Image (cartoon, rainbow, N blue to C red):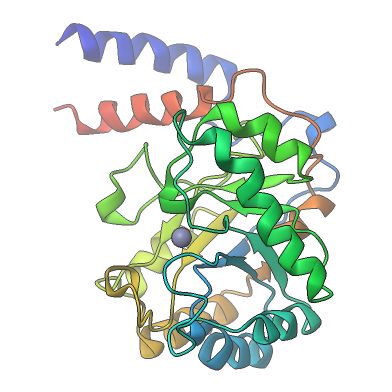
Length: 290
Ligand SMILES: [Zn+2]
């Protein structure tokens, strides 16, 4: 056994003792209400035109909530074939969907770019205000890059939830992830339990959603349906309709990210923002060892 695996084993023993992997209910001061099984959050990134033309009517038909993360990146300003207009975004808000912030320029936030985050957030908040949309309280890390150095800036801008991808626990390419464990995951580093890709089939969606039990919440990340500007993250309409049908048959409660505030006290931050990530990495390393 390698030293690395031994270290992973020691960490896991501690983790089990601490109850981190047993699906224990999080500390009561972090929970406002008991989290039901099959609680699912739908999120849609990058202002795709299909969010309005295809996703909106389907979600209304099913009565599902969702968060749309808006950016003016790429050629959003002039390309209204691939991207929504602000009038369409306002309509999503009026329908009851949440409008979230995804930075003006789709800027990946790292230690090197974090100085520009405030201006990037404000630009989208200003646009929302111009169109009668409340300032966003949810954020999605563009390109799924993130840094804890951004937490204070996000907080200052009224952001209470920030969603990342499935990395670093899983490689970006797989589109896999862990469900959100309130009390363990930092509210500004919420993992995507699934990040839909063109190659995804219903079983990938099922794998993500089936984690939504024992106090855990499945947050799903989508792009366009289809994504006419970014084909590497596109979902077909036929697949997407099968996903929604599955969520309905499983009697999932499907909500937006901001709606999680009825269950979670967002003012309680874990002392160590990335401890749960290391725990999961150790668990995966253990599973991968012979
Ligand atoms: Zn994005």
